[in-house]
Image (cartoon, rainbow, N blue to C red; front, side, top):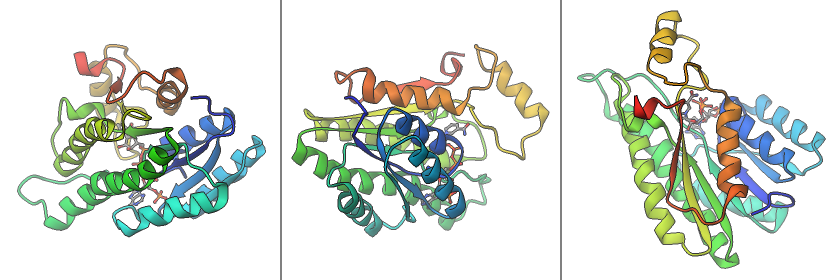
Length: 244
Ligand SMILES: NC(=O)c1ccc[n+]([C@@H]2O[C@H](COP(=O)([O-])OP(=O)(O)OC[C@H]3O[C@@H](n4cnc5c(N)ncnc54)[C@H](OP(=O)(O)O)[C@@H]3O)[C@@H](O)[C@H]2O)c1
């Protein structure tokens, strides 16, 4: 699929990795729905940048844990553009949770936004794509679902669910819509992580560097423009951590 003139929804697009994905798609000529949850100013900034690249772009606010929001996001996209070609699910809740003290509310927060929200938005978007007999969905997952670490259990379970969701959706939406996953390793570290954690991450990374948001955006580009003969695939973009 060529991106030029297509319409993409990118969730969690106001900042960090989602922002880079959104602007990379815009740089290839895709019109954008810039989804955000609370980062309104940052989302407006992405919209401004995208428009400077010559595409149409609109911000859209939604809490993805609220399933009713998915139909609205797709409806507003169609009102603006009369088409929808691409959905990139990048929004995510990532919070430390200590085993033995994990509350139901923390479990639900991760599972509702990361897994349930991604499914319902993909279902709303997928129906439109199936009708048009064309579409791409890319889920941003996490390469650590293969090698879970401690203190983030609900997050890691939600992302393991996305591995399964990617494959199951790929079956449901074939043959005209392709669904794939990109699983980042460390590309933007949490501000609270000190030099020790950084050293440990580099030790566990064969390519001996932290990745960049652009590494992830490039893999998303490949899922969309690189080939139409790939579905249900999950690409680790993690400097080789999954083989360490
Ligand atoms: N950064 C990394 O090194 C890394 C490593 C592995 C995997 N990943 C994955 O790559 C993706 C992007 O990473 P990131 O670090 O850029 O993500 P992030 O900063 O942790 O989160 C992205 C966005 O998710 C949105 N969000 C949170 N809760 C939401 C909700 N209930 N409804 C709607 N949106 C919500 C937030 O939007 P607002 O700011 O507008 O509130 C946030 O800016 C994520 O799926 C992440 O799990 C990242």
